Structure formats: C-alpha cells, structure tokens
Length: 115
Image (tube, rainbow, N blue to C red):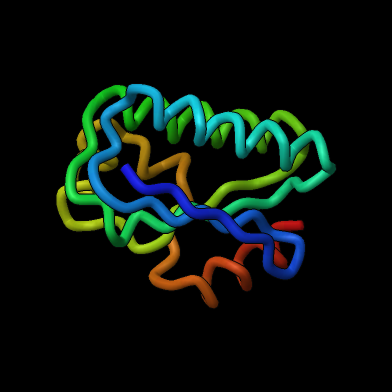
C-alpha cells in the first residue's frame, strides 16, 4: 500500500493507494497519525479513492484513527470511498460513525465546520 500525507489548512490529509489489509503499512499509517496528533493537529481526512480492497484489519485501522482523533477532541473524515468500501461501512454499521466526503474540498469544509 502506498501512503502519502500532507498538511493543508491545519488538516492532516492522508492519501492511500492499493489494498488496506493490515501489515507493516498499517503501523506506518498509525505512526503518521500519532506524530501529527502529538503536534496538536486534531483534524484529518483519509482519501480512500484509490483503495482497491479493504479487509477487517483495514476497517480496524480506520476505526483506530477515528478514535485517536476524537479522543483528543478532533475529527476524521473519509474521502470518496469506493462502492465496495461504502458497502462494508454500511454492513458493519460504521457509516453511522464515519463522516464521508465526496472530495478533498468538501472534507476540508466539513472539518472546518466541525471544529
């Protein structure tokens, strides 16, 4: 899995590409989040538009990220998940706890409003 991250308008933007299935990439993703939270960054958006497949470990990572940000008074938004990921979120009822944005601009706007 390819992970890229940038900071834009005080928001940690994470772009994922490939399969979100756990493993060493997962730890790198958590390390990125931990470092930014330690730097007092409380808002994040995860772009899932290039994620082909996600399994239970991948779902667990997303829930862990959401929990980390919310426990610090922040928020995390998912950007443009594929139809497959949307269905998994509905089946697991996680669509009730994750906010989903269609694009980066919408995510940034939603995060500004939540803060």
